Length: 210
View 1: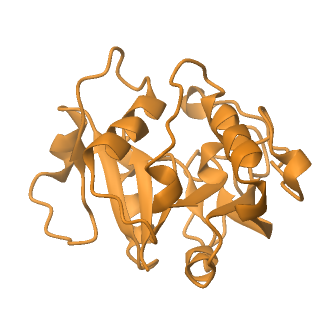
View 2: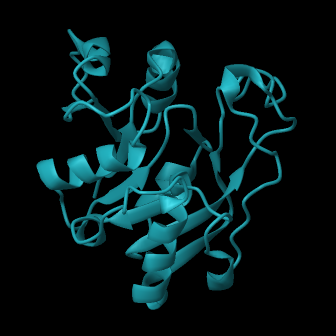
């Protein structure tokens, strides 16, 4: 069983940081790119990096959910592999992916750490209160980000993001909760660092290379 990280890729200035972190995690990375952004992967020789070209977007940096839908429509999905959604400024907590690979649940949902202080750099002043998932009642719009969601390929191939709202990740999560409540495993702690690469959001910690 393999783990696939599905990413709507925009932030080319994070590329080397993403490679540095992901190459220690034994995963397959699928950055989904428009015709301009995919140029960042010209000359790529790493077999664990598999960029996917999607159709041009209406607005650069917009429609990240449509990029994930494009992956679902275009790629060969392995039913028993795990697929996680992640933005290009988020990062998995060390050890989380290896823990995931030992599980059998069709859906895994973790909590998200969102840093130590609000940073207005890069134009993303998201609050720092964590997105905590302790039970099914915690899975709802405005309390979950799509980076907290990991699904088996058998689930991924039959689901889609609506791609109409900025809270489509919450709607997707609610759909998982309503259709497959008995197939959801809730991780007891943090599995993701939200806006991990945003300057000033996290305290400097050499262990995580911030």
